[in-house]
Length: 595
Image (tube, rainbow, N blue to C red):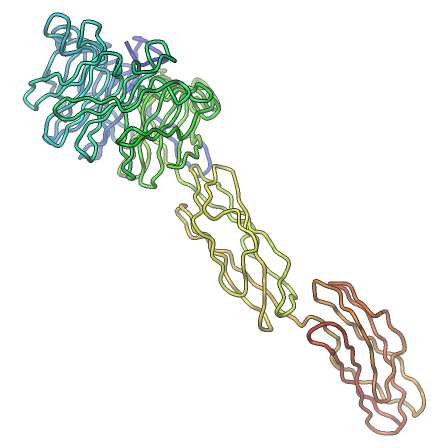
């Protein structure tokens, strides 16, 4: 009996198909397909061993069709270490392996063993298998039966785990301890009120106690058989039910827990929540639960396994169905609850990239995420996949220029857009501006941008000196190329300008009037010039003008000036404009020759 909602089949064929790359921006997705004789339908989480290779199990396939233990290199080359099927050695491993301090791997089978109720086994890196314990050695299976979950090796060197059923006459499951020599002690037998049917293993938290989940049971009657629990158990076997789910906050947690860097526990429920598609939750060691996110079908639904906290501080997991193609997803969620689907399975015809992941994820030493799908792949026997995820920030425009901004005034704002062009959540931590520039608006700092989303920063230029000035917009985030820089430049000018600044007239006969020369008054300000008065001195006169007593913002007008010498020789004068600008008056020098 496998995990809920997952395809079961014993039809198996052969070998591994190497790498098929699936195009997506800034992302590498690669899957390696099982083909039957090397295994089929992997359901357990992988482990990266001390040799750098991945190790895991398949529920079916192999020589006898009853599952395998395998080694896979990061290049996708599979070696079948062991084929399950001989009854006393166990059949149908549902969970992954753990590498113990002795370098060997330990795991469980849900069936087979001496009493056909599952067993605990050891397998060496070279594939030598040893059965350590067979469940249901006594009438009624008080030691439990059908372990669905894997093992952990605790700080005392012993192995701890759960059985799905057995224990009491009603068979609600157990928690057990096994020594490295194979001696098993049943620490606790569930009674439904405190939880029933654990589908996941345990974790040992920093307080040395063990924590886990049960898929059913608990105090709530909102689900048939109970909605499941989170429990704590001391190394001596004293169990405390920390929390009973009640459907609206999640139901039926099949996945295990992790203890995050903040000391709290995080996990998933397969169903329940606002949309009844499952939840992601946080719970303190004392039992205070916070539902971080209720899944939507488009994001993925029914997460069967738990989470992994990656080196970026975010959590990653899988859903068994839903997403763009209803084949399940890989998702990322921040500690604050912002979630994004990173990959939707069955993106290719025939789901050759895999479908229905149920085994959870690990982060490899290379930083990539690794997991498995129970079906799909080139032969529909499941696949192991690698997903390299990374946020990427694209800034537009890549530079900003401000022209002709009056000194000591604030320019109009120009915007820079920060877009998440990657395949993970982009967290913008800080926006900094250097030079004679400031941010007038900022929707980026402290935000999390999902894929394809964007935020904006508005920049203004406030020059305090004349000339061309430069600065930089600095965007700090969690992208690999952080910080991103946008060069800023601007030119400063006087608030109002009279141009040209000087003019020379040709020699002119006394008493005659020259052809006029045109001067332009330019208002560089964001406000209108007012109180404009124009004066010409010497043998010079204003002959015509388009200027009035006011001039609109960013506008200009013209002034025509003629020369009429009253004496021979060099004659000088000026054109002067007084107005409301703080550099008033603006002036031009005039020169002419009388003859």
